[in-house]
Length: 254
Image 1 (cartoon, rainbow, N blue to C red):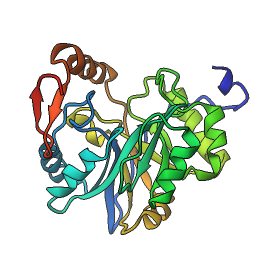
Image 2 (cartoon, one colour):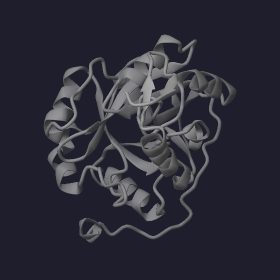
Image 3 (cartoon, helix red, strand yellow):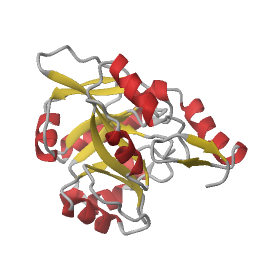
Image 4 (spheres, rainbow, N blue to C red):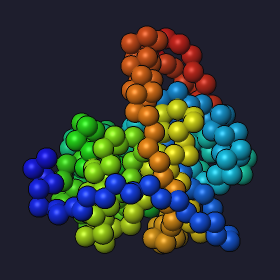
């Protein structure tokens, strides 16, 4: 908690907002996990149907330490715009890379990871930066070290149980003039649209970043218990799951 002491964050519980409809704007969901993450249960086939039913036009797939989920979804996207990404575990904590073309190894220094994201034309996105219950979050000292390479701060994470920690992220993004985004941190199908970035369409990472600056946010918190249970179930009960290239799960050790 000491890292929050001097940030002077106002206490305001009225933090859930809605976005008004706008002509030629699209719904973009970010920070979504699939079966390619051992802690998630969503197949890429189900994502296609869910996004169609919810009028979601673009989705950022950010599985743990792999871009294979995004690649698999992109292969069968059928009109859904897929941002291929990964939530990468660095030596100092988790960093999301968006618009990735190649895998980035886990365990590298955080600054080096940011550099590798940038080298392939990607965007650096910091998830749940101030939620102390996210034990793998990137801590403030490391965020400051990487600040010049950071493009996006996740100012609302749907799995963050205490709203105050999202407010800290929001204030941090404003203080350092970083682009804000909201992330579903989805590990099961029904949580995909807990956070929606309503923004103008895009055709490149730079256009995405520029249009995200003016996005409106639809956001709500999801039940953390189900997400935790999915992770426990996958690891302890089914001893993990194996994934084929289309995201289907088979029980047993990989």
